[in-house]
Structure formats: structure tokens, C-alpha cells
Amino acid sequence: MLTVIRGHVSPETAYIVSDYPYGRQLRCKIRYWLETKKSHGMRFVSQTTNPKKNNEVFSNKAKGSIYNTFMVMVVDERGYVFYRSLSLYARPEDFARFEAEGVVAQLDEQERKTHDALLAMSRKMNPNSWQEWDEVFVHAEHMAASMVERDVAKLHALYEQQHGPVYLPKFQAALEQINARKGRILDVPSTTRGLEE
Figure 1 (tube, rainbow, N blue to C red):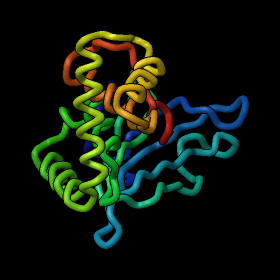
Figure 2: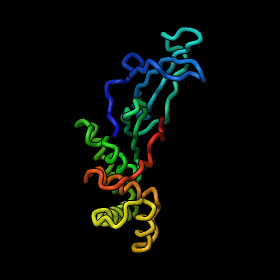
Figure 3: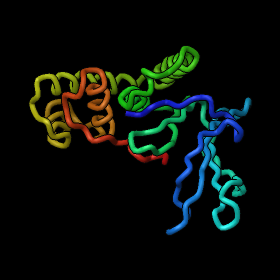
Figure 4: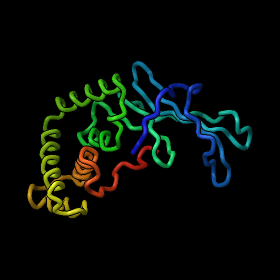
């Protein structure tokens, strides 16, 4: 489960981790923030100190992700800081993972409005993808509820026998979302862990 962290919107208000690896042996500090640019959107930025010079000054060049429409900064149970994002081109499984990782439940009112607007836009722009997603989700939910099989690969093969081919990551994302909604009924390994770290 991820925890959304807020208020870190500039180098001055950044989220600081005091013990971060720098090469093989040295340790440094790293700071993270979300930068918003009116005509570009949001991006995740990080910057480290240089322990070879002064470990108290953030002198290394800041590194930013690509800009995206909507982004939140999160920390996982290991203390790793990264981000989750959605764009105008987000797929159904992207929205499912946002929910499965507990991000949607932690959104404030304005963030939720943005999320919901992107979701509505995605459904309008990609009706075929959403129709396929809705069908996969309903059948996967039924299979999970009947506990036909606990292994994701076997569930996927069984699904394809009964309903035709479906991309495994899409099927797995549906199971992750079902788990988030129903309480952990299946042991589904996360398909997103560490992708943006």
C-alpha cells in the first residue's frame, strides 16, 4: 500500500531523505518535490547532495521526470519515494492500479475531481478499451469470487479458455483492483512495484 505525501512543491518545501546511497560506498541526502508548470503539467523532481564536497548542500543538478497531466508523490512501506501519474492517454489498467495501490482513497477533493475528470475523458476517448476492460473485470471478479484458482497465471489461462485472449498485465490489473475493493482475496503480485523509483 502506498501513502500519498503532499505539500512538497518546490526545492524549499521538498521531502528530504537523509540517508540515500551515492555510488557504492558513500551516503548522501536526497530531496523530492512535484513541480507544476502551467502549460506543461506536473513532474517529479529529485536532487542529491554531493558527499565528496558538502553533504549539507544540494549542489547536484536536479533531475525531473517527464511532465504529466496529474501526479501524486507517494512513499511505500520500505520508505522509497516515487510518484504515480495519470495522463489524457491513461489506459483502464492505469486507473485500476491507482485504486489497487490505495492512491484513489487518499486523494483530496481537488485531486479526486481531477482524477474523475481524467477517468471520464478516458472512457469517452477510448470506448473500445473500456468496453474490453469492463468485460475482463466482470469475468475476473466472478472467477475470483468463486475461487476457481488462486494462481494468477492459471486464472489467466482459464479466463482465455472461457472468454478469449486478454493481455496478462490487463488481467492482473483487474485482479489487483478486485483485491483492493474486496479485501485481499487473492495473492496477486503487484505489476507496478518499483516502476518509477
